[in-house]
Length: 189
Image 1 (spheres, helix red, strand yellow):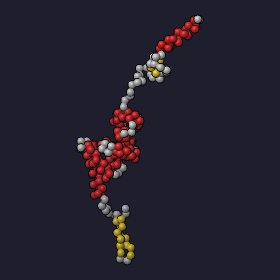
Image 2 (tube, one colour; image 1 turned 90 degrees about the horizontal axis):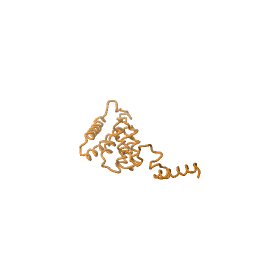
Image 3 (tube, helix red, strand yellow; image 1 turned 180 degrees about the vertical axis):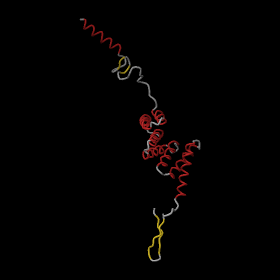
Image 4 (cartoon, helix red, strand yellow; image 1 turned 45 degrees about the vertical axis):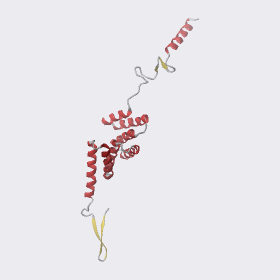
């Protein structure tokens, strides 16, 4: 055997002894994983990451994290409520309402989804329905949350203000003559 043949045989034996991790690995580590990173370790919970991003005001990133949580944990009341609240913070009221209603279909007693749906409805100018939703949230929460109590107070005030403000204002009615001696009172709706 020549020197080059012996060197080749030695290199093959050395490679066979060192490669115990299977194909595509060297010494048990993947070729695509940086040194010092454990590829078998699990990452942070995307739902928790999303909550932290929401607290930091990074709503778009939180939404992406919540989508990841939905992919990882499934589409459940927690992920739907979180996605809905991120859409609410981003001003996407229609999407937020639709998603929060889906969350409440799964669990009609889930307080965060009830509260956030009430906020969406208030933002959309629907204080009557928002009041009803906030009352449900307040009952489910047993009055423990100050924010739900304040939201309910605002919704009650808004619905009562509409009742009192809906009376006739000056110039709203018109007296119109129809025939000789007959008049009709008209209003603009």
